[in-house]
Image (cartoon, rainbow, N blue to C red; front, side, top):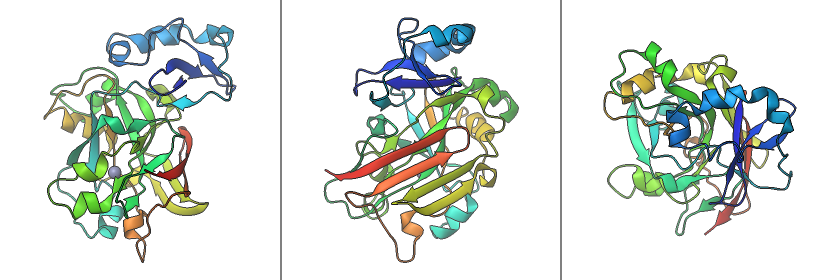
Amino acid sequence: MKLIRFGERGAEKPGVLTDKGHRKDCSALFADWNRDFFQHGGLERLHAWKAKLDELPEVPSAVRWGAPVVRPGKVIGIGLNYSDHAAESGMPIPAEPIVFLKGTNTVCGPNDPVLIPRGSQKTDWEVELGVVIGRDARYLTSAAEAKNFIAGYCISHDVSERAFQLERGGQWTKGKSADNFNPLGPWLATADEVADPRNLNLTLEVNGHRKQTGNTSKMVFDVFFLVHYLSQFMTLEAGDVIITGTPPGVGLGQKPPQYLRAGDIVTLSIDSLGSQRSECVQV
Ligand code: ZN
């Protein structure tokens, strides 16, 4: 199944994208794709409706796409998780996952504008595989067990302000948490729709020029390892989002470095997970 949300920001409703590409309104059946839905068997109930989804009202094409899940309890970022991206950043390949938190105010729709913060000269792009937790996960015993705790996958754009992140002291949080710094979607593909999250192509283009080309097979720590690993440090709650790192080709790694400016168009795609298109807007 492909879960979507639609409508004005802050007033989105739940829906699904059918195999024929139609958006269907599920708000008469479910409150929303939220923590309660995932934690209490909502995906199983939704699957039971699958044969009847074509009978649901269609969402008009002009209606905005929202993030495919409700604002999560937390967004956990993984840094330098592709060896070739670590190299372009001038950083060593980490011995253990580098973990940071990204403010949940960042989450927005897949085609919402990328907002360049005030005073920013170094707003950068990062295409990433997003993992949505399907039920609370604490002290998992193995990476294999982690599969049972993943609801599905979506595109995440981990927009990053490099001066705020790297030149202003402290941890990375300041450079990762500006408004709209995490367009998500267009859809959440449930785990059964993705044959192998460890073999997905990712791309990102700026104004039609390819910048990032990667495959999740190049991750230092794969998604199942990460869910198991993180659950040793914190409870991963249903609906939480893990963004799993970016392949090479970010602006910081260009020679010379290149950053986003107002009017730039950024497009992202991942196998099975669709594509995003955002225009950059100066705040
Ligand atoms: Zn990132």
